[in-house]
Amino acid sequence: MILQNLGIVYALLGAALAVFLAGSGSAIGVGIAGRAAAGVVTEDPSKFAKVLIMQLLPGTQGIYGLLVGFITLSKVGLLGGGAAELDVQTGLLILSACLPIAVAGLISAIAQGKTAAASIGIVAKKPEQFGKAMLFPAMVETYAILALLISILAVSAIQV
Image 1 (cartoon, one colour):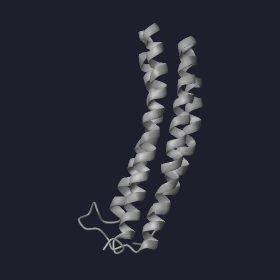
Image 2 (cartoon, rainbow, N blue to C red; image 1 turned 45 degrees about the vertical axis):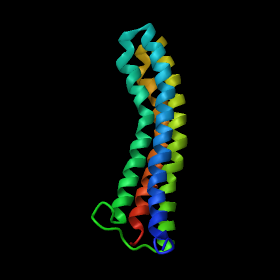
Image 3 (cartoon, rainbow, N blue to C red; image 1 turned 30 degrees about the vertical axis):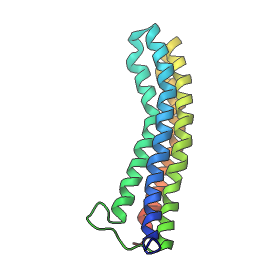
């Protein structure tokens, strides 16, 4: 019985990994930046809005993983009413297509949290440098976006 459903199991594992790994990375990254932000706000509450924006940046990878998860669930028919009959090969293809955002989302969100924390330090000392400070964590975001695009294109291209 399990072998008949192994394709859909692999596809669901891909969706779950995209959501879980990218979301976990975002939670860690937002936490890292949040600790730095809390320290700044303790010293100067007027900087709250600027540091909050930077703290939120690592959260985007979790959103990207969630998006790929939804696209995958829709692709295999689970959001439309009935699951498609997937062979093992197709299930593994879908799992593989979800891995770029899962892994890159995890790693880039943590790196972005660390970079955002450093940029929050810039804002603490020189609030007028907020625009420049935003560029550092935004550069890390580039790689999450690339992984998102590859996962979306790959999942969309698989014939079900």
